Image (cartoon, rainbow, N blue to C red; front, side, top):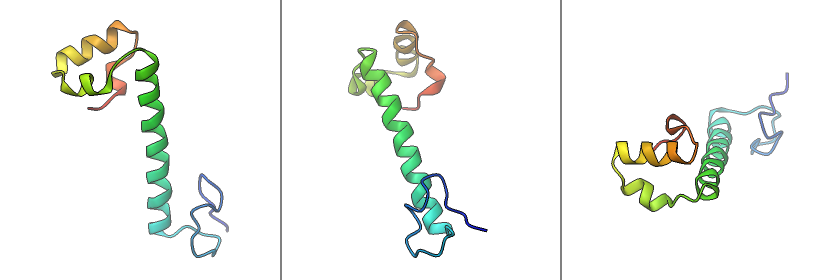
Length: 77
Protein backbone atom coordinates (compact mmCIF):
# COMPACT_ATOMS: atom_id res chain seq x y z
CA UNK A 1 0.00 0.00 0.00
CA UNK A 2 1.38 3.40 -0.99
CA UNK A 3 1.62 6.08 1.71
CA UNK A 4 2.22 9.34 -0.14
CA UNK A 5 1.28 11.65 2.75
CA UNK A 6 -0.39 15.05 2.70
CA UNK A 7 1.80 16.48 -0.07
CA UNK A 8 1.87 13.48 -2.37
CA UNK A 9 5.39 12.19 -2.94
CA UNK A 10 7.07 15.53 -2.16
CA UNK A 11 8.62 14.21 1.06
CA UNK A 12 9.35 10.69 -0.18
CA UNK A 13 13.07 11.45 -0.35
CA UNK A 14 14.14 7.86 -1.07
CA UNK A 15 11.35 7.25 -3.63
CA UNK A 16 10.10 4.04 -2.04
CA UNK A 17 6.41 5.10 -2.18
CA UNK A 18 6.21 5.20 1.65
CA UNK A 19 7.12 7.83 4.18
CA UNK A 20 9.51 6.72 6.91
CA UNK A 21 9.60 8.54 10.27
CA UNK A 22 12.07 11.19 9.05
CA UNK A 23 10.02 11.92 5.94
CA UNK A 24 6.80 12.12 7.99
CA UNK A 25 8.47 14.54 10.41
CA UNK A 26 9.66 16.75 7.53
CA UNK A 27 6.15 16.74 6.06
CA UNK A 28 4.58 17.57 9.44
CA UNK A 29 7.07 20.41 9.96
CA UNK A 30 6.12 21.93 6.62
CA UNK A 31 2.43 21.58 7.43
CA UNK A 32 2.84 23.31 10.80
CA UNK A 33 4.88 26.09 9.20
CA UNK A 34 2.05 26.69 6.73
CA UNK A 35 -0.49 26.92 9.56
CA UNK A 36 1.72 29.32 11.55
CA UNK A 37 2.18 31.48 8.47
CA UNK A 38 -1.58 31.61 7.91
CA UNK A 39 -2.18 32.68 11.52
CA UNK A 40 0.46 35.43 11.23
CA UNK A 41 -1.25 36.66 8.07
CA UNK A 42 -4.57 36.83 9.97
CA UNK A 43 -2.97 38.95 12.70
CA UNK A 44 -1.40 41.33 10.19
CA UNK A 45 -4.67 41.62 8.24
CA UNK A 46 -6.41 42.55 11.51
CA UNK A 47 -3.95 45.42 11.92
CA UNK A 48 -2.01 43.89 14.80
CA UNK A 49 1.75 44.14 15.16
CA UNK A 50 3.34 40.75 15.86
CA UNK A 51 6.21 42.18 17.87
CA UNK A 52 3.87 44.22 20.04
CA UNK A 53 1.70 41.17 20.66
CA UNK A 54 4.73 39.14 21.74
CA UNK A 55 5.76 41.89 24.19
CA UNK A 56 2.30 42.17 25.77
CA UNK A 57 1.40 40.23 28.86
CA UNK A 58 -1.15 37.45 28.57
CA UNK A 59 -4.20 39.56 29.45
CA UNK A 60 -3.29 42.54 27.23
CA UNK A 61 -2.67 40.23 24.28
CA UNK A 62 -5.94 38.41 24.90
CA UNK A 63 -7.86 41.69 24.98
CA UNK A 64 -6.16 42.97 21.81
CA UNK A 65 -7.08 39.79 19.92
CA UNK A 66 -10.67 39.89 21.17
CA UNK A 67 -10.98 43.57 20.22
CA UNK A 68 -10.36 42.72 16.55
CA UNK A 69 -12.68 39.71 16.63
CA UNK A 70 -10.08 36.94 16.85
CA UNK A 71 -10.22 34.04 19.29
CA UNK A 72 -7.16 34.33 21.57
CA UNK A 73 -7.22 30.57 22.15
CA UNK A 74 -6.28 30.06 18.48
CA UNK A 75 -2.89 31.73 18.93
CA UNK A 76 0.24 30.78 20.85
CA UNK A 77 2.88 33.27 21.91
